[in-house]
Length: 394
Image 1 (cartoon, one colour):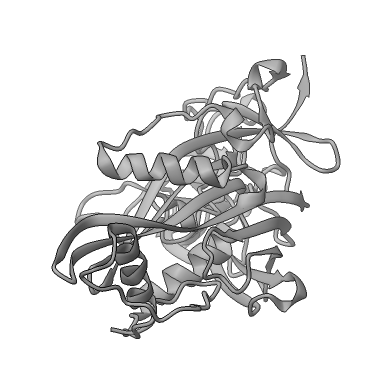
Image 2 (spheres, helix red, strand yellow):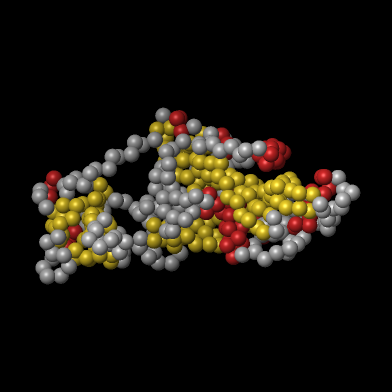
């Protein structure tokens, strides 16, 4: 086995392994030390999750206050002994007062989505019309419309230069099916019926192409073996390179104060018009949940930005992620998150990280044993040029 590594790195100060004559607490101490002083290979996936989880999570905790360390250790130790409980909607005060009741604020009522009752007809001569993935020439062509073909209008761009239509046969459709939506330029179609009576939904971008957001981070170590007990960081997210419509490549970079830990960075591809990370794989993993997409949930809290603006947020949790580290060790992340209800962008995140051991050591059996060491990470949004769901007091 190899020294257990966490990120930020833990420095182990003792080599005591414990013996049969030791007390249970000493044996636990020795077991923990043994585990941390044994090197073992780490897969790329585990390393990425650990680094990203802490970079993301570490940057996340300052917004979502965690209970005192003593209370955390007590609660988590008790949780090991009994069934875990899960709240569907944690009260906002679990974030240490950063989130207040949404009942004190006026939240705009969503505008009902109109049912498509407008039709456009491809108005080209001979050539087929290009159907694109978004409202603009920068979006890739995803289909073709034959001259004279009619499509139902789903929505339009704000200037009505582009129409979102339904439906044509896309690459994922079975033969003979047409369920895919796309966009056509107003220059290659004509409206069927009375053009002046057209009333359609307007599609607007959720995220701007020059997006920039910043979070504050706090990290603390609840172990006597930590060389660094606490550290703060800043996380900056901004669009890198030329947007490949409809995706924005958003680079996230974390910089730790006083160079406590190394600078790190990662990239998410996010749909500019939906606000959702491209793969959608991280919706169930709160460590990666920076970009859930527009309308992630009903507003149940209000978060005040440092500039005084108040954002309607959807807070959820507790969430749990477990990583099997090998040699009997399991890393457990437990935490809560809050996201802006307009864009689905992460506003607050907190988590507590523990290590559980299952196996035998020095003749004693352990089942998900917890020996008291933990990390806590806090992150809060401090500023952004993205239009969030700002609200005012009633």
